[in-house]
Structures are given as C-alpha cells and as structure tokens.
Length: 338
Ligand code: C2E
Ligand code: CA
Ligand code: CA
Image 1: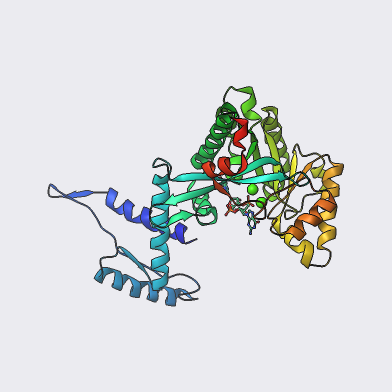
Image 2: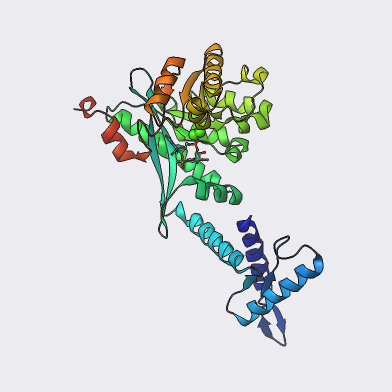
C-alpha cells in the first residue's frame, strides 16, 4: 500500500517535470510540492482531510521535501519503500539476488532427495534480506517476471553443474509467483531455462501454492499439463491452506503435496492436528502423490510423520537454507566426484 502511494506521487511529480512550456522564448518547467492526508488516519471527512493535506503542503513548501504526509511516520515509510523499490530495480543487473538451498530428505533413510531454492537479496544497504520483505514489491512492480525467470535459470544452471561434476544431482524446486503462472510466456520461459538438454528438465520442479492453482483451476490445469510435458514436475505448496475441492484435486496434474508448516506445528499441540496430517497423507497416497512435510523442527514431529507414512521432510531439524557452496559441501558427499 505505501509503495502504491509512493508510485503515484513519483508519477505525478515526474508528470509535472516532463511538460515544459515556453513564455517569450524562455522554457519553463513546473515543479510540484505535495501535501498528503490519508483516510481514515488523518481524517474521516473531506473537510478534515483537505485541511490536513494543506497543513502537510505548507510544511512541504517550507522544507526541501517534494512531498510530505500529514503523519510524519507515513512520510518515512513511503520514502523507505521507494528506496527499496529503486534499489530492487537495479538488483538484478547488479547480481544482488542469490538462491539459498534447503535440503529435502527421505523420511526413512535420511538420504537427500531434493533442494528447495529460496531467494534472498543481498541488499547493499541493509544486508541479506528475506523474500517476505521484497517479493510483494517485486510483484507490485512487475519485476517478479524477470527475477522469477532468473531464478529458473540459476537453479537449472546449478543442477547442470552438479551433473557435470558428478555430484548427486537432485531436483531443485523453484517457487513460482501467481503472476508468473498467469503469464502467457511462462511455459516458453521454462523451456528456455531448461534448454535443450533432456536431463535438465528432470532437474527442475515448480512449487505453486494451492490457493493460486485453485483461483482459476481450469486454466491452471492447462498450464500444468504443458509444464509437465516438458519433464518438469509440480509440487503444490502450502497444501491444506487453500481449500482444494477434492473433485479437482484428483484431476490436477501434479506430483507432490507439500504439507504446510502450520499443520506440522499443530500435529503435536492442537487437538485433531495429528488426524489432519494423517488425512492429508492418506489422501495423497490414494492419489499417488508424493508427500513432503514442511518446517520440521523437532524429533517428535519427525517421529510422528514417519509413523504416518510421510515420504520426505524439510525443515530446520535437518537443515536450514544455505548458499549453494555450503549446500554442496554439507549435503553432497565428495566421494561422488573423487
Ligand atoms: P515457502 O515456499 O513456504 O518456503 C518455506 C519457508 O519456510 C522459507 O522461508 C524457509 O526458509 C522457511 N523454513 C524452512 N524450514 C523451516 C523450519 O523448520 N522452521 C521455520 N520456522 N521455517 C522454515 P523464506 O526463505 O523466508 O521464504 C518465504 C517465502 O518466500 C517462501 O515460502 C516462498 O513463498 C517465497 N519465495 C522464496 N523464494 C522465492 C522465489 O524465488 N520466487 C517466489 N515467487 N517466491 C519465493
Ligand atoms: Ca515453497
Ligand atoms: Ca510452503
């Protein structure tokens, strides 16, 4: 929301600057000062809002700021989100994004079965930044398309290198934003990312949240079919939170259900929590889908999931997301290449 306001302000100010006009052979440009009042915090009726906007405008005129909000805190938040947005625009070309990998392991043998790619931003201003802070801004600005494509390429590249180096080349799962899935060119992008190598597609999995698939389920099915035809597999992320209709679930062209962390947490604490996870696992088994439990943190959770017949697990108990070099060092035995 703050960054929406910020964008409107920037556009308005830029609009003024663009239109020059001439009087007596001299060229002039207009500058703008803006005072902003926001409903309902700064007033619940038009009069109050206008008055407070004027107060903010007077302050802006007297200051070096181009715009000020009636509430000073708002000015600060907006300035900050604009700062982030501008820095994010440059982040891709400056190679500030990195993928960290978190291991997925077989719940019985403990063997490495895959990796989830989780994006991080090496922000020169505030350091390593988690996706919750910047993915929403990438989505609002449309930057997610380029960054998402970069993630697909990077994961594919890492997988190919593992193969070449004789490391255990497990599948890498990449998270997909709703906007990417809706993009007409998405399937073509995936195809480009995996390139021509037949085994490259086998190195990629897409994680798509349940609610996104269910939003427009018929269209999703078409996209998923096209993606799977390439040899790329699909996991439903955050399963259990998106109210899948059972009728559709049986028709979805997917390979894996990822049981949302909230269910894993409630397994031990909430009444019925264990039953819920058991139902999900049995459902998946009936539909011949692979199950991965997310966010496993304790031995007790692991024990219960094992009893319930879950296939794979991922979580801090086994390993946190780490940079690719650490992932190779910690989880890929060097004997494979020696
Ligand atoms: P997600 O796909 O549900 O990813 C799982 C999140 O849980 C990750 O947070 C991971 O670090 C965290 N996690 C893993 N194991 C544990 C555990 O045992 N305990 C706890 N408390 N947390 C655990 P992270 O890395 O901050 O990512 C947050 C979300 O950002 C992801 O949720 C995903 O939706 C999104 N995301 C990450 N990378 C990408 C990306 O490349 N593209 C897009 N579109 N979204 C991404
Ligand atoms: Ca995920
Ligand atoms: Ca998840």
